Amino acid sequence: MIIMKTDATTEEVAEVVKEIKKYGLRADVSKGSYRTVIGLVGDESKVSFEHFATLPGVKEARMVEVPYKLISREYSKQFESEEIERAVVRVGDIEIGGERPVFIAGPCAVEGHEQLLRIAEEAKEAGAHILRGGIFKPRSSVHSFQGLGSIGWEEAREALSWMREAGERFNLATVTEIRGEEQVDLAAEYVDMLQIGTRNMYNQDLLTKVARTGKPILFKRHFGAGIEEFLSFAEYIAAEGNKNIVLCERGILPVGKGKNYTRYTLDLGAVPTIQKETYLPVIVDPSHATGRRDLIFSMSCAAVAAGASGLMIEVHYNPAEALVDAQQAIMPDELREIVDVCREIHRLTRAHGNEKNQGKAGG
Ligand code: PEP
Ligand code: MN
Image (cartoon, rainbow, N blue to C red; front, side, top):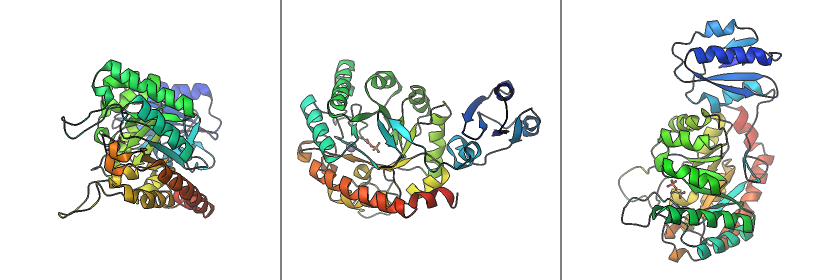
């Protein structure tokens, strides 16, 4: 990381970037309200930081010890005069990481026009801000429904157009999961945010490709990934100059042999822990974490109390008829209750400095 002097000129910044390129590296230029910081992207083992420190306009050049430096608090601290507590990621008109908790709701899979529009309408009435709906579904068995997008390009485009229609009609932003690189450009035409699912967290080519669309990215933790690993892969998105990243905790593999009674283990400790490491907003998906509709309310409350900036919840007007994840979808009236209670919890915990403590201490 190259920290420029507060009065460094544009030319001096350009000189540093030129030097960085000589090493075959890329430069991430972050212009803050205070000063400019330049991150080196690539293998910096041969870089002489002493040399950079002598360039005009440079205050300091040093290594950032964590592998996710571009999204780290340490990095952001250098260019903002006041440490930013939480970056706000805009999705359509919605701000994630801002004053209010954000609710992303919708079916696991888009199954039809009527189904999607009805869920969108009811989710909106219940207080949702963003509509979710899977069109390219990652499934454990090739014999189960893979989402309409897997049938063919016409079907994919049609389902995506329903997402857009539902978003416009009910004033909701939209998000859908991308499963493969060839789906990225098509989906980016229709939705406001692109989701990387748990199984693709490690897919660096896909991360690079979605990042380059410039769209906000909903990045889910792999169910077997440690926190450092999770953030290191989020860094692939940031390294493309796209820092519109929302991190999502969605449960990790359960331990032990006997029955665990939940689909995964919701790691809520990860929420404040990640927030100490990075300024990116973190949301929680209690639906895939628990796999049980009777646990969604309590885990949603707990997630917001832990500092989550929002929730992603699977909702259906008739969960029993959902083709995918029927056992974890909640009804719209249950969503309404969660929205009401979680807003209160968010207000209370913020008023007591939850977010502040998370930003400043530790990390
Ligand atoms: C989803 O959100 O539709 C999904 C498949 O979640 P995950 O990738 O967390 O399993
Ligand atoms: Mn699902």
